[in-house]
Length: 237
Image (cartoon, rainbow, N blue to C red; front, side):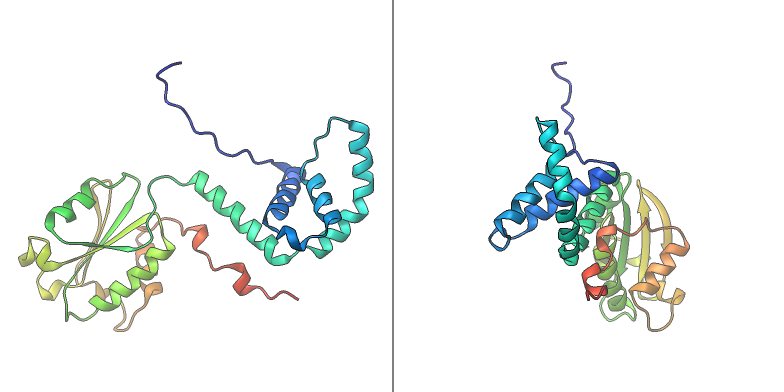
């Protein structure tokens, strides 16, 4: 119908064991440096990544001849490339299942109006964490650093900070209640933690803040993309 909004189609991805193998072969072919692949191996990869053929007999012959070659090629596959492919697939899957905007930093709010805007106008599915701080207050710097780390791991959460004097309600956020951590979603206050450091040890880190917020169920699932790269944790023989 004219006037109906167009729906953007997601790239088609084959499913099932054979589909996954074909997608992997195609990824391998596209990601390899073509100059470093022998012509016969490159052609074999091309055939393996495109199983359709107008000639069924020819396709069957290719299938029979490829069995040994394919086994040898699988043995030679670069494990780092395979891990990269798996990670890309996980990221694409997560992207299709995730909703709402994404963030990767702590946002500095410079006024009470900006403070209200981030609470009231942010996407309804977005969790907003606001740190109210001031210079020279114990724990404020450590909490700022912790939120910076968490912002890199929870891209669907909007982490913000604002000086107490910039809120327009400085009398409500005196030094004895700082640092204060507020958590909102869809304009609703979910968490109100005055003098947040009283809930933690004298010396704390991002994992401590993360665990505390998780105890109250205030953080969504951690992003797949934020998991440490497998290349850094897996030794290749």
